[in-house]
Amino acid sequence: MHRTGALYGQFKTLEQQKDTASLGMWIFLVTEVMFFGGIMLAYTINRHTYFHAFAMGSNTLSLKLGGFNTVVLLASSFTMAMAVWSAQVGKKKLIPLFLTLTIVLGFVFFGVKYVEYAQKFHHHLVPGKSFDISYCVNHPNQCEDVDGAELDVEREEIAKALAADPDLNAHAQLYYSAYFGMTGLHALHMVIGAGLLLWLLRNSLSGLYTPEWNTPVDLVGLYWHFVDIVWIYLFPLLYLIDRHK
Amino acid sequence: MSEHEHTEHIVAPGTYLAIITTLLILTGLTVAAAYVNLGRFNIVVALAIATVKATLVVLFFMHAKYSPKRTKLVIMAGIFWLIILLFMTLSDYASRVDYRGVRYPMTQNISLGSSQRS
Image 1 (spheres, rainbow over the protein chains, first blue to last red):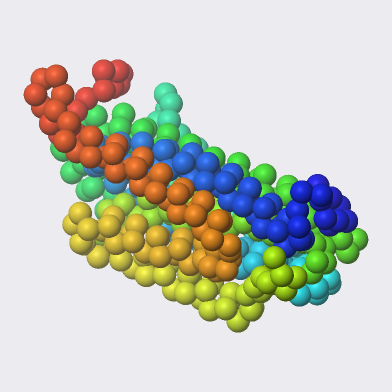
Image 2: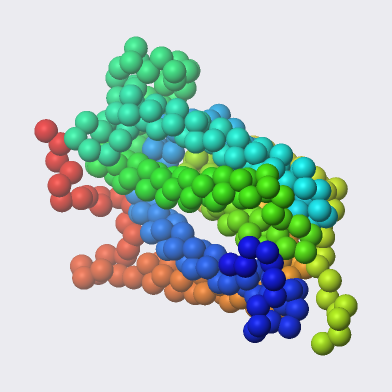
């Protein structure tokens, strides 16, 4: 990549050069759409087949934490868009500021995700030998972070779901495998995004990006917004199944 | 090609603010909608709202609205290919009958072989 933003011989204008770079990024993002699309499709089929177990699994997630993370991620997309805007209009001091805000929001997301994952380990909701969808219902003193009234609802729901699906515990593990797989892959994309943002931050501090040449800011922005879109779908798919009681 | 044919379109911060506000309102709406019993339409509403949100992000945050036609073509081709993947696979599952003549998927009585827990 030309660090100075000079024009390569195969392009007529800088404009054309930038459009080409952005086209390449979009082609990459389309492959990512197919990647996450296939995973979400597999999830949908399992969810349809084992509806009771998936609804039960979804109800054991914390809507508060998930909703909070959705807001954080949307806000980080906004600050990213503002970083791109700062580069386009040449506000050189604002670029690192908005990039830093984006990185901070990204790390807030990781922090909340850590709390959520840790909770799942404590509640015996990680697929494997000790997985027990009824663990919190049977050991309420081990799950003090879950509201008592919520546990009462959960107890009834588990009884109903067990009546409809005797293999509830096995099928709930399918849900949790999907949960960890999908949120894990999403988080991996965010880790890569955070790395790219740190690289942009370093360069922006030395004033590399100008209105004439800010292609890396623009392309990392596209990637960051794409990761946001993945979460826009993951949130209702994973957290919002059968919430009405 | 003239020198000043297509200059880069810069989206104003005001537009970004309007978009982020809409996205946050839609997030609240999708959570509220999940608490209303719409039967099988809960998922339809949730995915419809998510698609509106994703469209806003693509058009404005990702500047697709102001991109060259070539880029728009790649985006549309990607969405079209995704629809093929989803539609063909789901229509197969929705209409499939297994070797016992039983429709798939069958929510009841499906059992994984190794689900006996000690």
